[in-house]
Image (tube, rainbow, N blue to C red):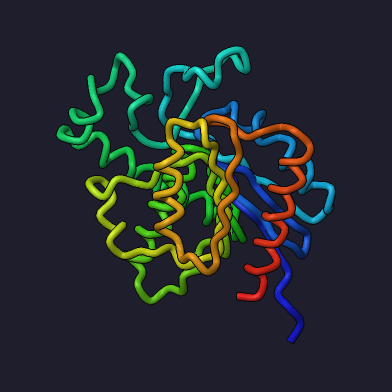
Length: 247
């Protein structure tokens, strides 16, 4: 039997569509709109292969501008669930209040529903790419699905994941963390100058180590745009795709 050809990929900054015609398709879940700008060189490099497409999924919750976005886009900015920087004047005063009121849990449930609906309407997808809390959502979603659908294979939703500059889900808000590790091939990208660097390492530890790869750079909460890093990261993702096709 010939190896399976990729079909789609989901980009979650939260998302992008990675569609290969007889190849992989990714959904991307960016954290904020600016992720498309910062990750552009890697996506452009992958698109040279002419067999990958990205589906970018917009978030549901309007968020204030973070420092990394300043000067890139006018806004508005959207995320997928309530977090420290998605608390607006109309929302809870703190993350703890959002947790106590149930608004945080509700927003996570609605984000899961958004992903399920997108998979149903736009899928199937072969992979997911997430940046910042887009990657956090991607991991939480996969672990959640493994809990509610325990008979599904680990790759029932996605065959691989690229997780960039992201903290792990909180076990207080995502009890499914206890079901880990994440048992699909992953690539992790983390900046040593990022305030979330140690958190990114924790997220990497939640994944099956023999099928995950960690790439570190000296930048902050962003993706380097220089040519050397772009080629390195893109090749790591190509290798990820090849490994996931053998599942």
